[in-house]
Image (cartoon, rainbow, N blue to C red; front, side, top):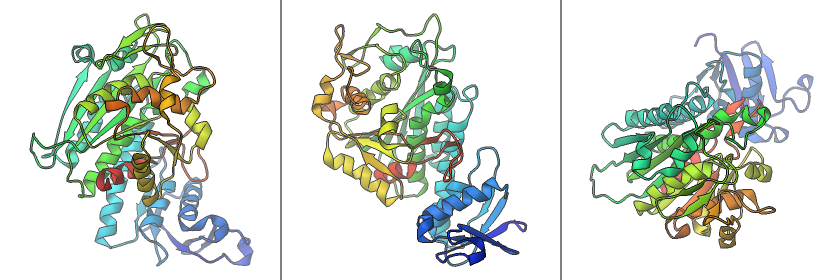
Length: 430
């Protein structure tokens, strides 16, 4: 990388000629990022500066000087990622521990961003499931086994939510069931189950989205990508000695003569019936199958992740992921994991009375809440109906901050990978 721009990070202001709030100054030998208070501190300054350098078309960077540490290097990388150009970055460190961690994050985050940014034509339900399995098996070939259940085989195993949502597409829905078992002991207890929403394209079904709302719906599999990436990072760090099962619930939500319709009723494996009042509230329908399967394993923890509701984005914007659980301690474990990994997460309310806010005149529950009820909370309450004891040891992440619809000052357009480090730490430390 002989032609790479050399970039250093300092906590002093630029020379007056650059202005008193300058983020970057330039010299013949490269650039200096000025992480002064007005720039938001070293991590924000590094990421914002990386976006600006990418915007200038700088194709290669080497981080130099004593101002960099593990987190600021990673913040720069987060901003320097470009989905249309493979920018080259020299981390600028020989520290083996730092390099191992940076490379582990890079592998997991790159997969999450690239699979989420992939076109709906290229990333079908089965492609998503297989790609996730391939990533994890590459990282731990002796510890990972899996199966993919697709098409009408889902009905044979009573995974009716995934099948109903996906039956409108000519490309079959699929469920990935993956077992990470580092001890190789079939009788070993399952510590944690991860469940991810993998809607590879969401038209809204018969509750059709407008074009503006549909344009980013290749990203509706962000939950499946995020739990896979979190597990991948935990494995790559070499610190995960617990048994983990992963369930990806994958489908395309399309319109056809065979698509599910408003007024349909789905009877799930656990006996709960759900009336369809909005086919655009499909994520919770597929996650229900994964949560039932996870609950059957009786793990200590169940964590699901999904780009589930617009209501969560209204509540916290796109900088935070939302966390919901009936249990204070369980929610706090995720919030603590996010804080320790320099990711942003915020708890939204979930109470037992939210279970009663999805009434149906024809089934046990409807797939949307009654008028005037909180969308993120009622969506989570719907999911709780499919968790053992309506929520024991369970936490739901509504991934409000996982995707950037347009380039900003911190992130390129597209998937961000924001949340995978939280999930990895939750797996390692809980």
